[in-house]
Amino acid sequence: MTDVFRETAAQPRTESVPLAHLSLELGHLYMEDLEGGPDRLREHFARVRPWADAARADIVARTEGGRPRISTCFLIDDYFSRFSTPADLVPLVLETAAEAGLVIDYLARESACAVADKVPLAQAVAGRLVESPPPGSYGARPPVSESGWLANGQRTPAARSQAMSRGAPWRPPSETAARRHSIFVDVELWDEDKDGDRTWSCPFLATVWQLARLGLLRNEGEAVLTPREASPGELPREWDELPPLVRLNPAAAPFSAYRTCSVLPARFLPVEHAVRVILDQTDVDSGAVGQITERTGRERHPTPDSVVERVSYVFYPDL
Image (tube, rainbow, N blue to C red):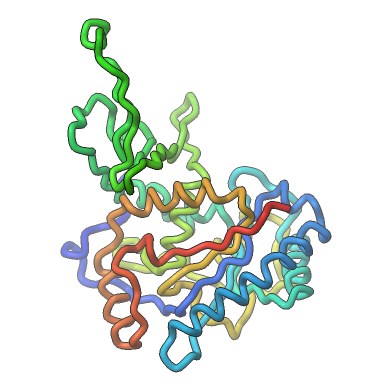
């Protein structure tokens, strides 16, 4: 599939998007979590509340004037499995969040991180991966575009032949940016069935989700995954009929932000470590980055140059 992104030199402009100071994720749950019903959701939001308050306090301290724009979001899995309907499930999520004193401004479908409004977002981001072969690598493994695997360093070399491996000592994998000892990660980005149909992995979809929240996704210079208004009382019965990203709070700050923070159960830690590995090797749209850099300077709200350092997390013990 053709990459839907273009270099900024080949297009007249990059559309600007409104930005908050912080995009605060209040949940990234799967259908098996939601099957627990209201009590499971109440317990989740009760655990999220104190950490969400801490994230708000942190961004207030970082913001000149102390009045930051903060939006909240919630991601529902409709990609790997489907449960209930938007009309039944979304009001339940909003109600249990409200019981904990939390307001969800935006709700997104995880399938939208693969394709949103006919734009193949995951495929486009895959086309922007820049794999950095570690020193000494000899190209025995196919590139990420063929293998669907991305590492943060040098994999253990595979013997090229019986003769070459004779007497050669085993060498461990090594992290490119290791601090004395390596934490090596090799991430599967997708797999394919016998017909060649691709299923994107959870870490890769979560990478697209982070890029959207940071306002760094474009399609031929135009903004993508933009929110649409929706009333909780007028939601469809089918997931495919729900817009990819809906604004549930008319008074919400912008969806995308200079920084993101996600409050998640601890079991998501390996997934989000993989997300950071992928983000660190993604060539994000330079036009979008330039716009954000200019605006953070104008607002006197310093933002890290590294995209991955704009992403933060709180992991609470699993339920």
